[in-house]
Image (cartoon, rainbow, N blue to C red; front, side, top):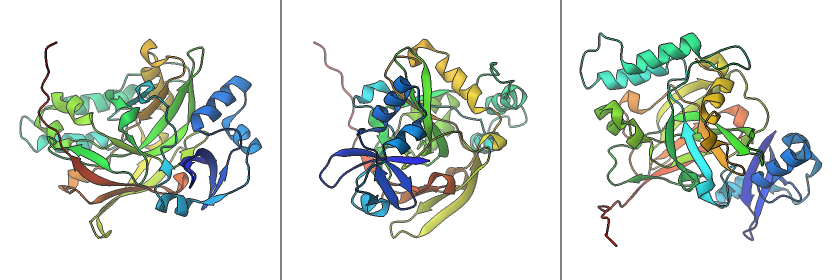
Length: 330
């Protein structure tokens, strides 16, 4: 089942079931968060609750998207209660991409880099037996809910950034129950947009490079993530023509960690089990246009598509002013 959040022509929020181009609203729930919290409270599966509430007044997804009414598939009314985080070096091939990127600035390339060490740790211990913890992955903080962009919205690159490049990924979407139990609502396509030039200067700048907006959606896939996910990442020029394109794969068949292991190493921290919070957690990638020496310009568009997730995630690149941040004394 695929779910999307959107607004009606009158501006009211809706959560609906997406089937092809048809969006059927779910009666009684205005948001995915409301639907998820009701499923937790009632002890029902999300798909079953959604099916039971399927209403009338269906709309065309293409019409909703064309009118800019698509919302992220899961959000929180207070963006400060939505954590956006992620893990890296989790996919087979991801270490080669990262290592090649870092090697371009020189240094002793014969010794094993930190990236390759981290990747090898994941290959050796990232898929433990069910119910046990494996090796912990790389982890990063990206921002709160204010940085999440829906399909069709621009990814804002601050003027001080040295680059704005896509990272096609799968994101896990979660809600924390009233008792502190994390619940996975589903999965969505994600563009974990980052500044790769800043990261390449020094690996310790990774944290800075991740503090950017990101694209999520448009649809939420309910249930388990397929073991093998195929997709395509594209950069479209200002006239909508494909300037760069490459296939990507995800799912545990193509990963060095299990989803459960990545989830454990995020939610093992009490900070991330605050009742009522929402989490968007990126699971990593191995495909970057930056690795092919592509520099995306403002006005061009990122497109990430996978048949299992319905419509493509599309976000144009924009640049916003970033004046000098001066602190005043009270």
